[in-house]
Image 1 (tube, rainbow, N blue to C red):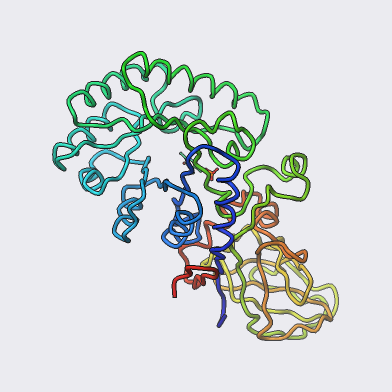
Image 2 (cartoon, helix red, strand yellow):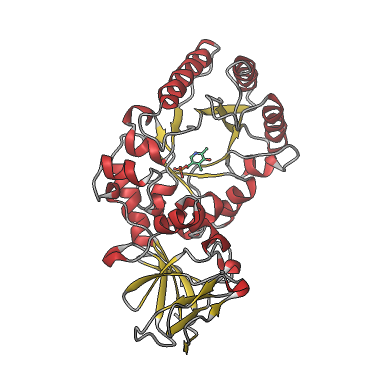
Length: 383
Ligand SMILES: *Cc1c(COP(=O)(O)O)cnc(C)c1O
């Protein structure tokens, strides 16, 4: 490492996918949206596909086409599609398209005609999240239109799917309610002549805790990256200390730029929101909010340096943070770890999420497209 880096352990990705795969008889779609939750979409996609995933899930058409342009031929589903996109490019590239409205379906039919081949679609039913998908009231009309389009050869209904509201709270009443609505929606589809090969609703949380929701395909995202979607207390309750055997894949770290002795009472960083209690050594770490460190981590973000976890002293700047190291022998060039696997007591993305009041998903995703170089380790790591 020269200055700072985000390390992504592709062996951990492989381990996690294999682990998830071993826990289900369903097919596995690795969700690689958001640039692979900040880990890099393409290397993650390849690692997932050679360890048990048979599908990839993304949001945008652009993400799906990027996978195809990189030579990835595995089935890909894209589910966040606004009107007016060049969907025919997706159809021509064999990208599966998620639709939850008649308007979207109509565009897919047009795209099929342009591409000269049927559009592969997954119909989405909104079972309660109130985000994408057709409401149960609008569902029969969507299914009827899809059945008609399937009969005239312009679409192939490959799947029917939905998404959970609160599967990260095992036992939450919405989980059973949504499963009921989903099964009713499937029965309606069947009655109207649509029998999809793939019924899917399970995100990471449901993949880990609700085998009855696996159906034909599971769609884990965060668990692929070795992080649990469940709260700490739920994780501990269900599987003490084990985190379902997942291994965090991302480590963020940097070398200390300089250290210096300062007197007691020294205000530190912008606004002097932190003052030293006694004469001490400050260490400047060259990562800031331009790199993904949340500014909300001011005076709270944990960083391991010299074998101890310390809290950021004062404000997070655009490019750097400061640590108050007391009389510990820290020096310029030492490696400071923001988060990683958590082995040997080092901070994790979960610790950061807790410190900042967010979720681990946001922590790792923030470190995605920044100036910090991503370094891959493990088999198949790109040079
Ligand atoms: C992001 C997403 C997933 C994966 O969710 P995780 O909680 O990361 O497992 C699955 N399905 C859909 C529709 C999503 O948007």
